Length: 351
Figure 1 (cartoon, rainbow, N blue to C red):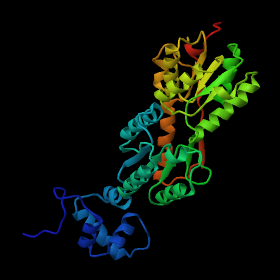
Figure 2: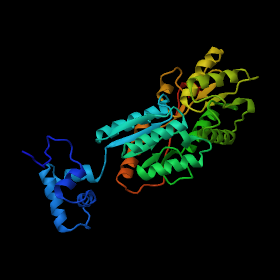
Figure 3: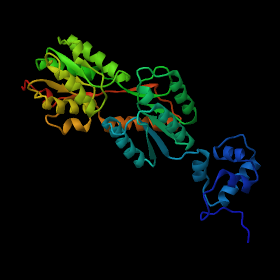
Figure 4: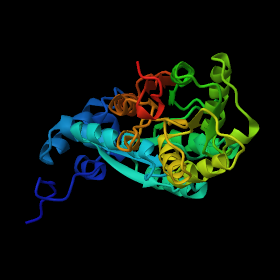
């Protein structure tokens, strides 16, 4: 016996099944399920009757079909090995799971072309929203073409950026590091530092320029000086980059009182290399990191750092994602503030 009903034991109901059962177009079904008033009463009744015959309640079907939500979130990072990115992803994934969402992690490996492919794949899979971290948005000069591609994707799937990009209106969650760097440089001054170096990173990344400028500004404000040969920013944001930068520093005529690293991963590499060169931290040179990565707290001595509260960071990411998914208004730029955490790598004068 032939039966046109689509029961629970059959494949998932689609908008086309309801269209066939009710004898109206898929567009009309969509309007009924979304509560649109632009549908005749006869067609509305036909659609609702088809929904009833399908074995689903109108509310449940409306939620699954009319909203077209997949309950998935895309998450694009440039380097999942970097503890900064992995820490944020880890806490966002927990929040997503607790709220009925799955997170699709996409690691671009710092390749802008690969970023484009991953962005296309996630929009093609109709993720409900996409977090876009680093990569082209962290570039010292973010290309107009790269920004346009993000804006086109944002028209298909709501995006959230975690870097400051002034040439787009896509919502952004950015760090405001002025206060933390001011506190960091004040702390070094209080420890008796008169000179400092800046270590690690690469000139192609905007965060290096921003943090270095603030370190120079506040360092000078608190009476500290530096030299061109102590500005060693031609390596990478990695442990190996930290080793290379520290090796170059040890080859200079004299060491500064402190070395400020662009992140904690660099600081760990610098700590290892300074020991290899016979330099003690903090007795011979003070050492600082940035970001509050877990690495900074498991080495000896622990590394003083400007630390993010990663669970709070992730909560803000998730809250903004929910606003984006549900088309609620959100501020163009939301700021998050790291704070100074002092550990043994800078505690020369203990009081």
